Structure formats: structure tokens, C-alpha cells
Amino acid sequence: MAFASTRSPDKKISFKEAVFRGLAPDGGLYHPDTVPDLRELFRSFSPDTPFTEIAGRTLHTLLPQEFSREEAQAVCERAFSFSPVLRKMDEDLSILELFHGPSCAFKDFGASFLAAVMDSILAGRDERAVILTATSGDTGSAVARAFYGSSNIDVVILYPSGRVSPLQEKQLTTLGGNISALEVKGSFDDCQRMVKEAFVDGELIDRILLSSANSINLGRLLPQSFYYIWAAAQVSRNERPLLFCVPSGNFGNLTAGVLAWSWGLEVERFIAATNVNDVVPEYLESSIFTPRPSVQTYSNAMDVGDPSNFERLLAIFGGDWEEMSAVITGDTVTDAETLETIAKVEKATGEFLCPHTAVGYLASRRFLEAYRGNEKPQIISLGTAAPGKFTEIVEQATAKKPPVPEQLAGVMELEKKSVMVENSLEALKEYLLKSFG
Ligand SMILES: *Cc1c(COP(=O)(O)O)cnc(C)c1O
Image (cartoon, rainbow, N blue to C red):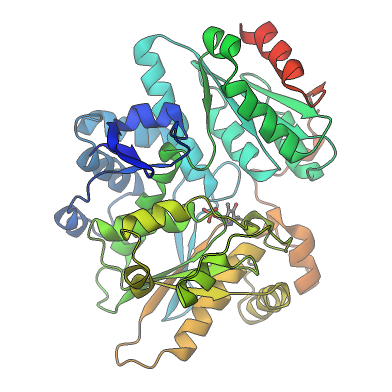
């Protein structure tokens, strides 16, 4: 398997190259150039196959030239010190909890895998790299935790001063070691602009090997397919048709699941659940795609008005609306419905849901209620963050405090270490050259 930009399918590069490049030079996203048939591999997995083994064997089968069986296994063991958990709610619905990693959100799977791959490539070449990343809060902490302690990579995180939550700020600024936090006097857009300008600054790219870790990186997308494969193996002895419901924003998570389906994973259908930022459900309904500015909601990690991975989804279906809408159904959930769902589920089961997970949960319930076929499907709905990361909203819905995950306990007491910088390329450049040049 090789990879090409969604915008120039003829220029092929390897996975490892695509990982370091991040975004393609033409502005497109790197995407697999072939569709392998992995049905035999998937059939060999049982409910007892460990997650890291499923990940390692899938990686090797996809990219045998780039990862030997042993290398693939080593990278996955190193990346995944945590596993997904499948929690059965009832006969029809389970939640795939993806929030038991270091930052308590599903992005840990992608970020940790990317860190392990980059580290192994650089160790082989005896080189060092600097990862530059701008964050509005959540992604930065997954990236920081994933790369923390790497001996070949330094991470510089830019965040807008005073515009991230106190818990998020502590997560970004208290690790130390190879992780530095720059507190930018400006907005998230300023941080993003500074990072973009740095990547095209001749002097900087001459003196420092700069790379990015943002969510469109292929190295974050690919490993997200592994937990769909693991979850399908968990229910493989039960013959009912399987659906996945995915709370979505930038659509990387859903795209990874659809990729696994394209390789032969037995999935009947995907439900793309969004908050009111619903350009994709709207497209699935009407065949018209209208990106627009995002609206703020309780499930704020899904507040995306122009999802970048839509381009990859289109590529999987050859741009054909009919084919896509035969496999993916959309649903939109409002803030009021999100609160109501968190409250209802807590009352009935004692389980707390984070607002993003609640969006998927309600979409799953509505699908099951409306289902009129003979063979009632089973739905696995993705749990994308721990409820204890969103205490205020969960408390507003249930009048109870969700438990704080052990990974986050104590972080508020640690001492913040950050460097305040102006919102200009010059300020960033001075810092980078002084520290790494
Ligand atoms: C990023 C994120 C999402 C959305 O995932 P996409 O891959 O961008 O669709 C959903 N929930 C949480 C908690 C997230 O952090």
C-alpha cells in the first residue's frame, strides 16, 4: 500500500514519508492508493485476541514493506499501553470506551501511535525533530502526553493565553522534559497562523527538522481503524448485523472506521452523529455539501463547520453520493437533547456520559427505535471522552459530579511552566532557534 494526496492521486509516497509531511504540498490529505482485502485476517481474530496483537498484525498486513511483523508489534506495544473497553448497555447497544488513555479521549490512540512511529523512524536515522502544534485545548494534551519522554523528539505547543480551561492549561504546561508550552498573547487562530508560517519559513526549516502532529496526519488516522477491528472481533460470535455509531466533528474517527469496512470488516452501516454542526448529515440527506462557520455547543470537540476529513470520505466512495449514503446515515443532536440524554442514562443505569458520547448514544437509540427490518441490528456507539473531563456539563445535566479519572487527578496541583510570547512568527522563530537551532 502506498499513499497519495486526495488532490493528486498519481504522486505516491510511503506511509513513513506521509507521516513526516502531515499535509500534502497541494493542500490535500494523504490517503491509501489501494483497497486491500483483509477479510481472512479479520476472521482470524477472536474475542480473546489482545488489542495490541490486532493492531500489530493489521499494521504489518497493510504495510509489510515498511513494518516487519516484529517491528509492527513493537510499535503497537509501545504506543498502546491502554486498551479500548466495550461496555454493554443492553442487548442492542454497547459503548466502545476509547478514553482510558493518558489524556482520557480517543485522540490518545492516534497521537500515541504517531509518536511511536516517528520515534522509531528517527532512532534509526539518528536525527531529532521538533513537533509544532497549535491547540485550542484538547488535542494539545493528547499530543503532549503521547510524545512525553521521547528521546528523539521535542514538542512545542502553542495555546491562546486565557482561552483554554484551567484543567487543559495544567495538562499542557506541567509535563516539562521534552514538552514546552508557549502561551500566545492572542487567539487560537493566531496560534495556527504562527505554526503555518513556521512550516514555510526557509531559515527555520533549514536549521530544524519541523513536523506536525495535527489530526489530519495519516499517522493519527490509520491507528483509529484498529479499535473498530477489535470491537468487531468482540461481537463476532453473535450473528446480528453490526453498526457503528460515531460522534463526529472533523470526521477522522468515522473515516478510519469506513476504511476498515472497505478492507472487509463486516459492518452493515455507520451512523454519523453530529451536534448542530451538521454539514455531513445534511449532505447524506440531500447530496449537497455546504460548509459554514461552526456554532459553539456542549460537545465542543465536535464544533466543526468544514470537516477536513470529508475529502477522504469522498475519496473512499469515489465521490459518489449514492454509495456513501448507502453505508453512512447521519443524525443531528441538539444541546438540549444532549443534556437530556446524559440525565436519562445516569438515572437509568448510574453511568455518566460525556456530551460527545451522549450525542452518539441518542443517535443510536433513535436508529434502533426507527428500525423496521427483521433482523434487529446491534450497535456499537463510540465513547470518545471520559465524563470527568466535562464535569460542568455533566453536573448541569445530572446534578451529580462524575468521577475524575485517575490520569487527571492531581494535575491541578502541579506548577504551570510556560513561556509567554507575542502572536508573531518572529517571536516563535526566536524561541525555536534559541532552543533548538
Ligand atoms: C475530536 C473529538 C471528537 C470528534 O472526532 P473527529 O475525528 O474529529 O470526528 C469527538 N469527541 C471528542 C471527545 C473529541 O475529542
